Image (cartoon, rainbow, N blue to C red; front, top):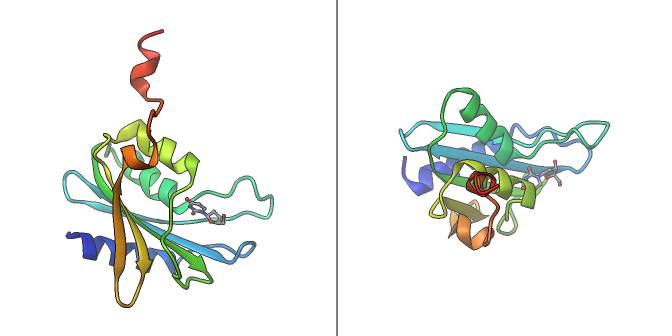
Length: 139
Ligand code: THU
């Protein structure tokens, strides 16, 4: 799947967001090294804190399916699903990416749906000086 197709998959996943409290819909599409794609949407909860972000849904779906080698993720979000600006993943999701991904892992942040526009950054851009599993091995 090319970058544009991955962005389209994230935009499609955004439509399934369960976000009755924020009305902010988020979609993600994660491409594994083997070419398979896992999508995710944000899922909110009346108790608020169990809410999970779209990126982590996509990553956890992939990991629970035995995948741990990831190439890139496309993300988008907007009030009631209208994409009005780029969507920078939250800090918790960046840390979860850090668990499985190299510094070169790409994050495609969608700026507009029609015409499709997105910014490409890498994990090291979003999370410099990141804490990784390797740090635990030094203890
Ligand atoms: N959200 C995500 O899905 N991903 C992020 O990286 C940040 C925020 C969701 C959580 C919540 O349902 C809504 O956006 C508003 O914070």
